[in-house]
Length: 255
Image 1: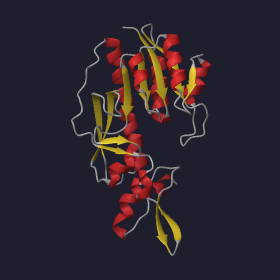
Image 2: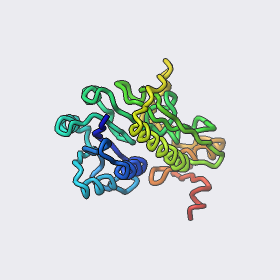
Image 3: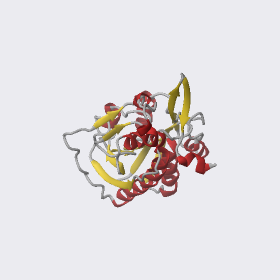
Image 4: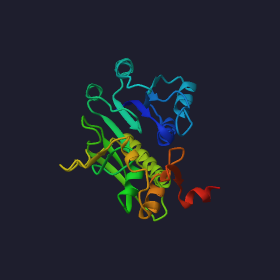
Protein backbone atom coordinates (compact mmCIF):
# COMPACT_ATOMS: atom_id res chain seq x y z
CA UNK A 1 0.00 0.00 0.00
CA UNK A 2 1.35 3.39 -0.99
CA UNK A 3 1.43 5.69 2.02
CA UNK A 4 0.85 9.40 1.50
CA UNK A 5 1.63 11.00 4.82
CA UNK A 6 0.38 13.89 6.90
CA UNK A 7 3.13 14.44 9.46
CA UNK A 8 2.33 16.36 12.63
CA UNK A 9 5.62 17.16 14.35
CA UNK A 10 6.62 19.23 17.32
CA UNK A 11 9.45 19.53 19.86
CA UNK A 12 12.92 17.92 19.50
CA UNK A 13 11.63 14.38 18.97
CA UNK A 14 9.27 15.57 16.24
CA UNK A 15 12.15 17.27 14.46
CA UNK A 16 14.36 14.20 14.74
CA UNK A 17 11.63 11.94 13.36
CA UNK A 18 10.89 14.30 10.47
CA UNK A 19 14.53 14.42 9.38
CA UNK A 20 14.63 10.63 9.40
CA UNK A 21 11.34 10.35 7.50
CA UNK A 22 12.72 12.68 4.81
CA UNK A 23 15.71 10.40 4.41
CA UNK A 24 13.59 7.25 4.26
CA UNK A 25 11.10 8.51 1.69
CA UNK A 26 10.60 6.31 -1.35
CA UNK A 27 8.03 5.86 -4.10
CA UNK A 28 5.52 4.20 -1.75
CA UNK A 29 6.30 6.37 1.29
CA UNK A 30 5.88 10.10 0.74
CA UNK A 31 5.29 13.15 2.93
CA UNK A 32 2.39 15.15 1.48
CA UNK A 33 1.92 17.83 4.15
CA UNK A 34 3.40 18.77 7.53
CA UNK A 35 1.73 20.43 10.51
CA UNK A 36 4.28 22.15 12.73
CA UNK A 37 5.45 25.35 14.43
CA UNK A 38 6.50 28.12 12.05
CA UNK A 39 8.71 30.10 14.43
CA UNK A 40 11.25 29.53 17.18
CA UNK A 41 9.19 31.03 19.98
CA UNK A 42 9.22 27.83 22.03
CA UNK A 43 11.27 26.23 24.80
CA UNK A 44 13.51 24.27 22.40
CA UNK A 45 14.11 27.40 20.24
CA UNK A 46 13.77 25.69 16.88
CA UNK A 47 11.54 25.38 13.80
CA UNK A 48 13.55 22.77 11.89
CA UNK A 49 10.53 20.97 10.47
CA UNK A 50 9.24 24.18 8.97
CA UNK A 51 12.61 25.19 7.49
CA UNK A 52 13.28 21.76 6.00
CA UNK A 53 9.77 21.42 4.57
CA UNK A 54 9.88 24.90 3.08
CA UNK A 55 13.22 24.17 1.44
CA UNK A 56 11.78 21.02 -0.13
CA UNK A 57 8.48 22.67 -1.14
CA UNK A 58 6.43 20.39 1.11
CA UNK A 59 3.10 22.06 2.00
CA UNK A 60 3.04 23.38 5.57
CA UNK A 61 0.20 24.01 8.01
CA UNK A 62 0.82 25.99 11.19
CA UNK A 63 0.04 24.21 14.46
CA UNK A 64 -0.50 27.47 16.32
CA UNK A 65 -4.20 26.61 16.23
CA UNK A 66 -5.96 23.30 15.70
CA UNK A 67 -6.30 24.00 11.92
CA UNK A 68 -8.94 21.34 11.33
CA UNK A 69 -10.26 22.83 8.08
CA UNK A 70 -6.78 23.22 6.59
CA UNK A 71 -5.94 19.62 7.44
CA UNK A 72 -9.16 18.36 5.87
CA UNK A 73 -8.41 20.33 2.69
CA UNK A 74 -4.88 18.88 2.56
CA UNK A 75 -6.14 15.32 3.00
CA UNK A 76 -8.54 15.79 0.10
CA UNK A 77 -6.09 17.65 -2.13
CA UNK A 78 -3.14 15.28 -1.74
CA UNK A 79 -5.06 12.01 -1.23
CA UNK A 80 -3.47 11.55 2.19
CA UNK A 81 -4.09 8.10 3.66
CA UNK A 82 -1.66 8.02 6.60
CA UNK A 83 -1.20 10.22 9.67
CA UNK A 84 1.88 10.23 11.88
CA UNK A 85 1.99 12.36 15.02
CA UNK A 86 5.22 12.99 16.91
CA UNK A 87 4.46 15.26 19.87
CA UNK A 88 1.67 17.22 18.18
CA UNK A 89 0.13 19.73 20.61
CA UNK A 90 -3.42 19.12 19.33
CA UNK A 91 -5.83 16.22 19.57
CA UNK A 92 -6.63 14.78 16.14
CA UNK A 93 -10.38 14.89 15.69
CA UNK A 94 -12.58 11.96 14.70
CA UNK A 95 -13.60 13.45 11.36
CA UNK A 96 -9.93 13.63 10.34
CA UNK A 97 -9.23 10.07 11.52
CA UNK A 98 -12.23 8.82 9.56
CA UNK A 99 -10.86 10.39 6.38
CA UNK A 100 -7.77 8.12 6.58
CA UNK A 101 -9.75 5.11 7.87
CA UNK A 102 -8.00 5.47 11.24
CA UNK A 103 -4.63 4.67 9.68
CA UNK A 104 -2.99 7.01 12.16
CA UNK A 105 -0.13 6.65 14.64
CA UNK A 106 1.27 8.55 17.59
CA UNK A 107 4.47 8.63 19.60
CA UNK A 108 3.46 9.15 23.22
CA UNK A 109 6.44 9.78 25.44
CA UNK A 110 5.03 7.93 28.44
CA UNK A 111 3.49 4.64 29.57
CA UNK A 112 -0.08 3.99 28.47
CA UNK A 113 -2.66 3.82 29.90
CA UNK A 114 -1.02 4.85 33.19
CA UNK A 115 0.26 8.22 32.02
CA UNK A 116 -1.96 10.10 29.62
CA UNK A 117 -1.54 13.84 29.10
CA UNK A 118 1.30 16.24 29.81
CA UNK A 119 4.61 16.73 31.70
CA UNK A 120 4.89 13.04 32.42
CA UNK A 121 8.64 12.96 33.13
CA UNK A 122 8.01 15.25 36.10
CA UNK A 123 5.05 13.23 37.36
CA UNK A 124 7.02 9.99 37.08
CA UNK A 125 9.59 11.33 39.57
CA UNK A 126 6.92 12.76 41.87
CA UNK A 127 5.22 9.35 41.86
CA UNK A 128 8.44 7.53 42.75
CA UNK A 129 8.61 5.42 39.57
CA UNK A 130 11.69 3.31 38.95
CA UNK A 131 11.24 2.95 35.19
CA UNK A 132 9.96 5.15 32.37
CA UNK A 133 8.24 3.91 29.21
CA UNK A 134 7.61 5.53 25.85
CA UNK A 135 4.84 4.22 23.60
CA UNK A 136 3.97 3.88 19.91
CA UNK A 137 0.23 3.42 19.40
CA UNK A 138 -2.63 3.65 16.97
CA UNK A 139 -4.64 6.87 17.29
CA UNK A 140 -8.26 6.38 18.30
CA UNK A 141 -11.22 8.66 19.07
CA UNK A 142 -10.27 8.68 22.76
CA UNK A 143 -7.07 10.55 23.68
CA UNK A 144 -4.04 8.27 24.17
CA UNK A 145 -6.24 5.17 24.14
CA UNK A 146 -5.43 3.42 20.84
CA UNK A 147 -3.92 -0.06 20.60
CA UNK A 148 -0.27 -0.23 21.64
CA UNK A 149 2.08 -1.25 18.84
CA UNK A 150 5.37 -1.18 20.75
CA UNK A 151 7.04 0.19 23.88
CA UNK A 152 10.56 0.92 25.08
CA UNK A 153 11.55 1.33 28.73
CA UNK A 154 14.46 2.97 30.58
CA UNK A 155 15.47 2.98 34.23
CA UNK A 156 14.94 6.05 36.41
CA UNK A 157 17.96 6.54 38.64
CA UNK A 158 18.20 8.39 41.95
CA UNK A 159 19.89 11.31 40.17
CA UNK A 160 17.59 11.60 37.16
CA UNK A 161 15.70 14.83 36.57
CA UNK A 162 12.65 15.52 34.43
CA UNK A 163 15.00 16.81 31.73
CA UNK A 164 17.40 13.85 31.81
CA UNK A 165 14.50 11.38 31.62
CA UNK A 166 13.13 13.35 28.69
CA UNK A 167 16.48 13.19 26.90
CA UNK A 168 16.88 9.45 27.47
CA UNK A 169 13.30 8.60 26.55
CA UNK A 170 13.57 10.70 23.40
CA UNK A 171 16.24 8.32 22.13
CA UNK A 172 13.88 5.40 22.76
CA UNK A 173 10.99 7.20 21.07
CA UNK A 174 13.13 7.66 17.99
CA UNK A 175 13.80 3.91 17.92
CA UNK A 176 10.04 3.33 17.99
CA UNK A 177 9.59 5.73 15.08
CA UNK A 178 12.18 3.87 13.03
CA UNK A 179 10.37 0.65 13.89
CA UNK A 180 7.10 2.13 12.60
CA UNK A 181 8.67 2.93 9.25
CA UNK A 182 10.00 -0.61 8.99
CA UNK A 183 6.49 -1.90 9.56
CA UNK A 184 5.29 0.40 6.77
CA UNK A 185 7.92 -0.78 4.32
CA UNK A 186 7.31 -4.47 5.00
CA UNK A 187 3.50 -4.11 5.15
CA UNK A 188 3.58 -5.97 8.45
CA UNK A 189 2.01 -3.45 10.80
CA UNK A 190 0.59 -5.21 13.88
CA UNK A 191 -2.95 -4.59 15.09
CA UNK A 192 -1.41 -3.91 18.48
CA UNK A 193 -2.50 -4.62 22.02
CA UNK A 194 -5.72 -3.06 23.31
CA UNK A 195 -5.44 -1.07 26.52
CA UNK A 196 -7.01 -2.45 29.65
CA UNK A 197 -10.35 -1.13 30.87
CA UNK A 198 -8.37 0.90 33.39
CA UNK A 199 -7.61 4.06 31.43
CA UNK A 200 -5.04 5.30 33.93
CA UNK A 201 -4.84 8.99 34.70
CA UNK A 202 -4.93 12.03 32.45
CA UNK A 203 -2.42 14.66 33.63
CA UNK A 204 -3.55 18.16 32.74
CA UNK A 205 -0.98 20.66 31.51
CA UNK A 206 -1.32 22.96 34.53
CA UNK A 207 -1.35 20.22 37.16
CA UNK A 208 2.36 20.61 37.97
CA UNK A 209 1.81 24.10 39.33
CA UNK A 210 0.05 22.62 42.35
CA UNK A 211 3.17 20.67 43.34
CA UNK A 212 6.04 23.02 42.52
CA UNK A 213 6.40 24.54 46.00
CA UNK A 214 8.49 22.60 48.53
CA UNK A 215 6.63 22.36 51.83
CA UNK A 216 9.05 20.32 53.95
CA UNK A 217 12.66 19.11 53.96
CA UNK A 218 11.71 15.61 52.76
CA UNK A 219 10.60 17.07 49.41
CA UNK A 220 13.90 18.75 48.51
CA UNK A 221 15.43 15.90 46.52
CA UNK A 222 12.34 14.67 44.69
CA UNK A 223 10.92 18.05 43.76
CA UNK A 224 14.25 19.60 42.78
CA UNK A 225 14.67 16.77 40.26
CA UNK A 226 11.02 16.58 39.17
CA UNK A 227 10.92 20.27 38.28
CA UNK A 228 14.33 20.58 36.69
CA UNK A 229 13.55 21.13 33.02
CA UNK A 230 15.07 24.40 31.76
CA UNK A 231 13.77 26.89 30.76
CA UNK A 232 10.69 26.15 32.88
CA UNK A 233 10.36 27.29 36.48
CA UNK A 234 12.08 24.93 38.94
CA UNK A 235 10.85 23.93 42.39
CA UNK A 236 10.90 26.62 45.04
CA UNK A 237 10.75 27.30 48.75
CA UNK A 238 8.95 30.23 50.38
CA UNK A 239 10.75 31.74 53.37
CA UNK A 240 9.56 34.98 54.95
CA UNK A 241 7.43 35.66 51.86
CA UNK A 242 10.47 35.32 49.60
CA UNK A 243 10.79 32.71 46.85
CA UNK A 244 14.01 30.65 46.68
CA UNK A 245 14.54 28.27 43.78
CA UNK A 246 15.83 24.79 44.61
CA UNK A 247 17.99 23.16 41.94
CA UNK A 248 19.40 19.60 41.74
CA UNK A 249 23.05 18.70 41.46
CA UNK A 250 22.70 18.34 37.68
CA UNK A 251 22.32 22.11 37.37
CA UNK A 252 25.72 22.71 38.90
CA UNK A 253 27.32 19.92 36.86
CA UNK A 254 26.23 21.73 33.68
CA UNK A 255 28.37 24.71 34.63
